[in-house]
Length: 223
Image (cartoon, rainbow, N blue to C red; front, side, top):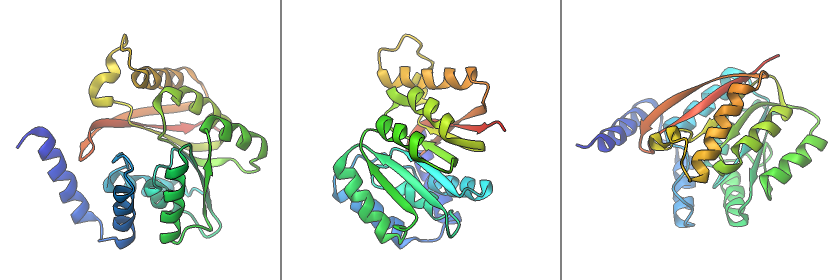
């Protein structure tokens, strides 16, 4: 088998071994496929990691930037306490519609709110109207705007909040400093801002699996 085939097979083995069958999440992924959404949801193992991180943090308020069909929203929403809430931002109207339907299937409509519109604009509104800060922020939207999302996320984060940024390795292309790909430059700007901003401590992990070769950033906002 090729390396990518091994990664995928191991990912499936780990998921099958460590996670119970979940009819709701399977139905969500099926609905996303049938609606023609791009197959860029987090993997089941990555979704469970988000769930566990939210549990470990004891997150009561979660912000997600980039909803797609709501698969990762559901994973994190399940980690919330009874009166917890998750706000997720989605620019594409069709994606937001499907996400709302999926969130209802998961029984999380009382905890999860999908805000439709440009994330930059939605974040500006949240900065003005959000009474409680966020304990966990998951950034998984268009990569060119990642530096802007991070700056705004830091303003919305509670002390000690976790900030997670997905898809930062880009199959190793993140090291190409002269790349003309705006996704690469967006990620590089995001990482450089993390290094420069004294309000947050962070590290990055490379990953392989059914989603290929990539990685994520995990940061903790200082008190």
